[in-house]
Image 1: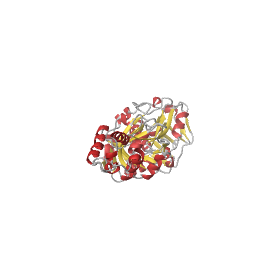
Image 2: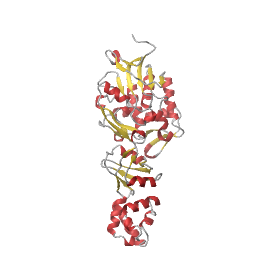
Image 3: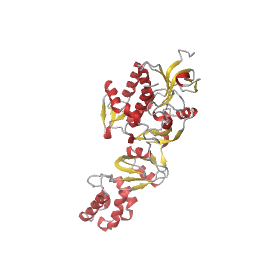
Image 4: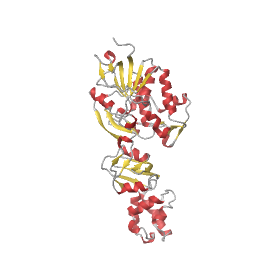
Length: 407
């Protein structure tokens, strides 16, 4: 017979966004819930997200905002717990928030508001949380699931939820523990890699990015399979900012990327503008004219780097001396300034881990394993990763809620 003091209906490993949502949902159903968090504090990623303001969801959440080997897997959970549901919870707790670009919702005050809200809900549902408690041993008891349950160190439970996250930002306690548990119970773990992560360079562009460090601008950044029209930020290591982070989810090692510095103009429109400048200001230098473009404000430091890369031989020539064919090539270069990253900054700064527990072996409605009754996987450990903009939190809320309703 199980020891009443150490037996729980549900044990959740991981006190992040998905784990806390699962805990408060299950606890609200009257289940006795224990959350084991290996680090010294729950919700660390919540606290650091959005520059401390927590981009907790997005007004529009669609399957196309997620990456998975099984793109339809996320649909069920996202439909049954929507961004509107989470917004209602935020409003219930009188948390002030605001919409930024592209439907992103942020706390007006602090990310602590979101964490405190989750902890308040968990406490109201009598959830027990233990921090600094890394699970070291997990095994299925005879019968497994509701029939036999699980032993987690000195604790036992009927249902076990793995909400331990991925490999991103190891300084916050990230580890591959969830993947180890999945493999232990016969699950396929799809290859993982860092996502939503800055690009790094080791060629001449590294020097360029160092010279431009701190400069941000809107571009269309693309690789073979995707493009994003958002801001990039030059850093002393390479390229960051929303467009770079988004593209990192699709970029493959060895593949070039291209920056379109005039994303809202066609190739012909840009060439027409260059030719009109040649006609109206024949004695001006191209670098001077580019710095005066009416809609795209190129920083002078950037123009100098572009000059060195695209029209160095004409640097001191009046635009009247530049052949139209040269201006055509320069215009094309400005809209497809191609660079080849040496890699990314990796898990150290990645906001999400791509890949993970294969969704083909999970229920899309409950997140329960098809390999082991009573075992559930939620959040980042699963092979579902969102775009930048609150989507990964919405997946955490939705998947945690889906499991919390049935464990």
